[in-house]
Length: 276
Image (cartoon, rainbow, N blue to C red; front, side):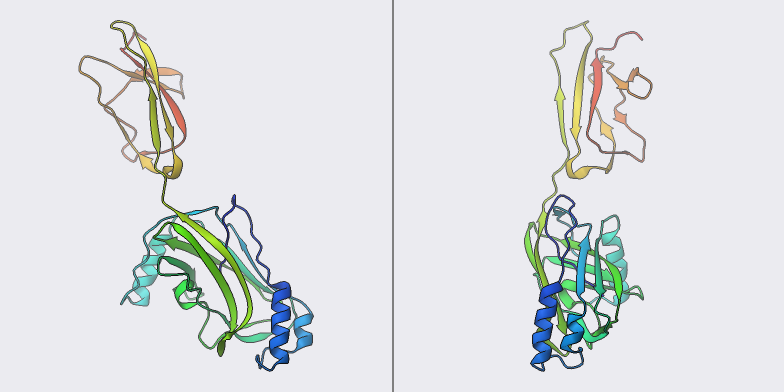
């Protein structure tokens, strides 16, 4: 029963608390008779309802959205599982510290546009896009006294831009009655590929010389790759193996068939070959 809101920051933990606004807005609505069944003014004043989000990223990479058009829930579930595999979720916690049950509330659809999805899985294994449909049954749910639960929310967006998000807890019978809300911006950017540079000297026939190749992983960090080299005929280039401190002939294809993970690294090579 929860929802996301976030702001770019260095893996910061952003606490989104409804506290004063939740109490003051709800008290005013109850006093005006706009929120029947949600308790009394004194009940709201006894504690607080809080929404917290942890694991927020400074930015998110552009990814393909899950196609939900004319799809069954079973097909959507499988597609979302594949889409969020390997992603780090935003952990959203909703807590009720008022000591009073509140019924008939839900998270309204975020409506942040067609290029972003906010996926959360319910207790029976179905995935829902909170951006499009909100969270919770249409008739609302009950936030029990002393309730606290955490839901993983996965963000996917297919366009690089800054998305203003406003999450609202509303009266399910009248969504115009906003009980509490929190807002933030989400930055989505295009991936930066790995960069490879080489420092190569001018070679002199018969004189071995070293050169280096530096890789900056950027957003390709961790991807499994293999390195392909074109070695001129008659030249036996070598690479330096840091694990044992020895030089080995450089093959045309370097790395196991399964690949090795891209990382920031500088590798040493030399050519022409010399005796070992």
